[in-house]
Length: 387
Image 1 (spheres, rainbow, N blue to C red):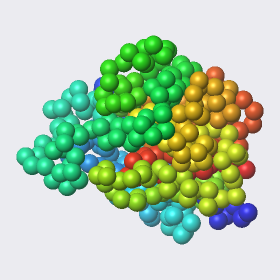
Image 2: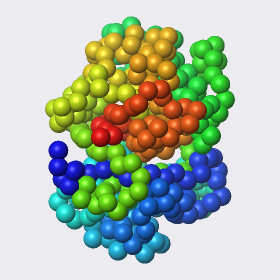
Image 3: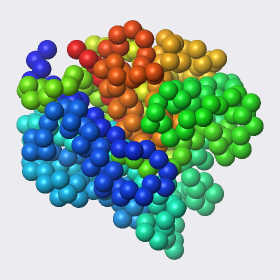
């Protein structure tokens, strides 16, 4: 392997994670950037690229308040390449884009980030107003007339198919939320650090059958940063580089209307076509769980179990526990660690591969991890390796 032709995650950083934070989202982003730079041993003068998802969204500033151009101006970055947009293969597609820029020689060190401010925006709508529309248009015309107004209802249709066709039970699905909560207790930065019992889960209010309130992540204010560096520039960093061994992203049909399978399934299959690694080589899986059912589908999609066997694979929670054969979402996932909107999974994968998880560090000597984002009509998977 020629390291010079590879791309690596070097510095990683995270701001404070909370609800209704008063610190400005740009400052949260800068906090995360500084932490990533310090870990990598880089200066802002060495950064020549910026990549984010989905860029600044004026209609929903809580969802995405900080664009790439704002961060470039705020930090005085001399960018030879930058990108920010929503029409990519989900959140971690920003990392995929950065790898492309590095491999084509357009950049050497790229700051990739995702900043969310949804809890604060909801609490302070006068500062972060959401645009109201007087008509239903675009993709919403196929869902809103049927009262399918939120992602919970969109994902529930796929979850119900697993219930009806594959006999998925609520007790099985509960293991995602229970595992997330147990791991979050060991993560000092986690948004929710309270234990969860099966009885509490089963008595939780139903949102869209079979998804209950505790199957859902919750609005969070935070920023997460990954620095992607060229192999030929590794002599400039001081941290342990984590190689991006393979990537996959899929958009089969960018619609929730009657799609047969979510994009996670095609993405999972494609990932293994681009590497010699196999599912059995993975030491930890950090799988997108905006809703618990999504993590289950990623387990199937990535070949850790057969399609339809996800419920039985996680039954009892032992396989996916911190000391299990496939530790899952060791930082608490989005359900408990915080809705970091995809980037938290790649951040945690790097933490685990470097052995920096503290109380939540998995046993042994982990060398390979998978991190995903999305999974509905959009999906991205990264395979990360410590060489």
